[in-house]
Image (cartoon, rainbow, N blue to C red; front, side, top):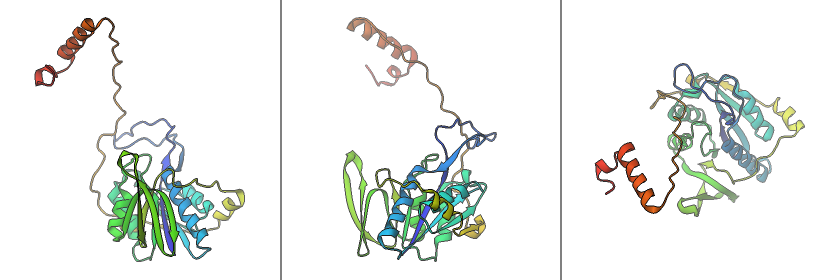
Length: 263
């Protein structure tokens, strides 16, 4: 079995974010970087499946980004992936989901991947689009946000959350793409021998044009901090006084009464 895992390097969400000079994304100065949390579940599930198949599977991990993402690829290799692919794109942080999907799908096309695992979404953009766009481009079945996975005799049984806190169970066969949600598994922590071994594993570097980069569908034009809201107002008094104060607020600070919304 041939398995592909797609990962992304994201900034630590505890960092301090400021818009860049162009106002199109955040300034990377001083930020710490790590593997996207949702992608750690994807890596773990791919490695567990390879272990279940007793070595009859190979796991390739791919990531799009500047040179710094190699560190995150090595992290996935130390968790048990067999080889890495780095699509070396310095502009990746500002690429739209379509462009990222075009490069990963371009790499994957014709390579016979039976399964593709990726995180449900990234922690920075949270678009949740790359996985489904890749599945469409590759022409394979797709299940998003899985929280359970079983493999038996070539059939996958997966579970995902749906509206209202309910869950549904689906069965499908390869080829397929699955996006992974928190709760699927507990990602392992690589030990020192695994970390050292990862440094010797194969890492292929591709340029965006080689991978099939396409033109963007959307672009970020005005990235800015959230606007601060004014402090709330605490009203005190009896019911009649409170009603009068609320009515006054509606009349002076909103347009609700003028639009027929409250009478």
